[in-house]
Length: 239
Length: 239
Image (cartoon, rainbow over all chains, first blue to last red; front, side, top):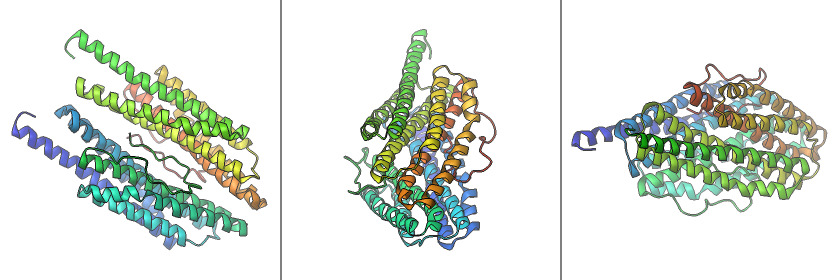
């Protein structure tokens, strides 16, 4: 980073990297929104579209990896710059997993359509709308490097867990009342688990946005719902 | 990498990084084995031990990140060396997720104990033993940089899917026959999903071992069971 020219190239390469991450963010948001639409409209065509388009997100992830490797090799960044560039890899992994979970939810909706005797979807759609809103906010927070908005996403993690737990109990009731609904309810529970995991990844990204903006991650334990009946999967640390 | 001294330091730092990854591998194997024991012995104490010790794996993941950042900053590796070092981050993420899933399975076994009226565990334990064996083999393959063994793990991914699908069908039958088993069966299905995901992460690591040994990843699509009734979660690409 000796000449002004070098600094400018470095900045423009960083901007490209950020741009690829933003593309990933917008695409995952769109994929989740379409997956939810597939479920609520019971449209297998829409679900298949989500499954098909997941590979676009995977390709963007590969692009991020290449851009990071090139940046490191050519610019040999150290300290804060290096940490920032490597955290792009972590964020890309979170977006990629969100895409995977959106595709999983779409696959589950296909299975649910096949299974017939579906349960009411109200609580599921409420969960879906909370998670989609979290994802939208975190993409916005990253776009504007808005750490206040990111902290807001981070703090509200427990809302997802609470609705997820209600949904679980509701589904158990439907299954017990009517065994013909067991198959469809099981698929819906797995789709809900995917949504909950998307919420966890949004929380990971919130931590990264705070780190990018303020140089440190939020302190303390993530807020969790007091009764975590089924939110048993530990949140992946973004390390 | 100008002097012999520098090369030696670089090699010893690489050896340290590999050593941390191996510690992660051995610990995840031990955690999965203990989680399975907790389920088969219906021991809540053993399950709690797995949940408690998961943070050790998270700490090792953080160590890998630090070692990678230091190696890049101090040695400024390029080309193949850089790619190799960055792939250590990917492998650490896979091991960390395996640890998370082992802890999830342990949490589910606690819930299953609470739920009472448990279903028979034979098929679940068969699935668990296949997954544990895959994890053991991939840790061995990484220890000895044995790409033939890694390819063997990679090719057998479909076995896990097949048993997972049988288990799913079996649990549906139990739930339909006896509604009192619904809660326990649901927890077992989620524990099984965690095992299946561990299988996917083992496959990711198999690809990385082949890359480390031979400089390229296995070609073509991963082998998948022909009837993927429930293995609906896309494998996370290691990109």
